[in-house]
Amino acid sequence: MKSFKIVICILAIAFSFSGCMPTQNLSHLTVVQGIGIDLSKSETRITIQYLNLSKTGGTQALNGNITAVADGNAKNISDALSSASKTLSKKVFFGQNKIIVFGSDYVKEHMTDGLNYLFRSVDGRPDVLVAMSDKKAEDIIRNKERESRIPAQTVYDLLEIGEANGLGATVTVNEALNIYSNPTSDLYFPVLTSNETNVACKGIAVFSKEKYADTLNAYESFGFLFINNKIDGGTLLVSDSQMGIIGLEIISSDTKKSVSVKGGEITFNCDVSATLVINELENGFSESLDQSKINKIEVLSKKRIKSMCTKAFEKCVKSKSDPYMIGRYLAKADGKYYDKVKDNWRSQLSSVKFNIRVDTQVKKVNDNSRRQ
Image 1 (spheres, rainbow, N blue to C red):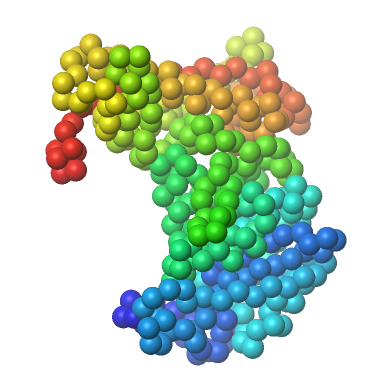
Image 2 (image 1 turned 180 degrees about the horizontal axis):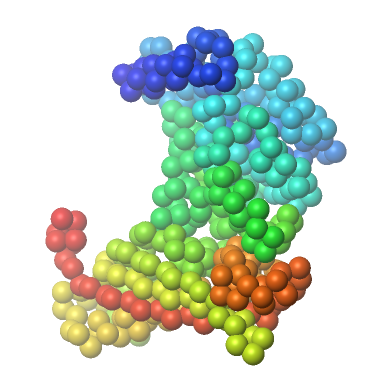
């Protein structure tokens, strides 16, 4: 209750000093937390998750969900938002929105309209996260996330944690605009799925120009994040006939990318380095491993990471998608050659060579020292 009152006070102060809108009491506003955008037959369907301030008193403020959901249908996003707003008794405020989710049908058929809304809407904020649902966006927005207080915030946190641990991705409106503004770079969005109790990450969707191209599975998504230098943690699994399944905790990683051109052949160079700690060992204890076995685990981890990255690269170029910004690196390496191929860049992608080098350092640390 105390923490929620603090949030309310901060919001109220922010509204009071805002030059973009007249001073209004928070209780007079519908504060949006998440937006879902779907296709509904021939119309656009909007689902809005918003703070239900009537739940902020008593035991409801301490336990369970303090949001509600409204929806509306119309011919486009703006009109559908207006339709949803009419079902609410208070003025809709988008300044605290955390996430925009597109349904899979909408992404595959109307993504150009979706991008126009993201980049041109007066309701938008540059730091809002963008995602795609594997089915309906409405499923994500209506999911109560195990009765969390603000489900949209929980999904927001899920995406941030998921990216750091190789399970998902985070893309803000501002980052999407930065990618989109380059003629040879392609968008990517995290994919979310909804079950009865919660939302989970389910890969990364990649685009070719403005069109949906394909979705990377969990294995490929891990490689994608390694290539784009997004991995800060997570677990890497390798296996050996003697040691069994080996769980490796990623302590740190760094990726350096470049492009070289020789004889008209473009090579995308990717150097990955990672520090790993042995977390689990199926057959035995990590403390009993000698240096020869640690060296073997390093070889296995290098192969695993290399395979993940290669699979992720191959799937993207096969889909004529460049979410790695290879074109931008080419422009830096050889501007004249970039000017020659940029207008037909996505057709050139299949001929780009992938040169990946992986270096890993494996350490064995017992549970107590690792936690310290």
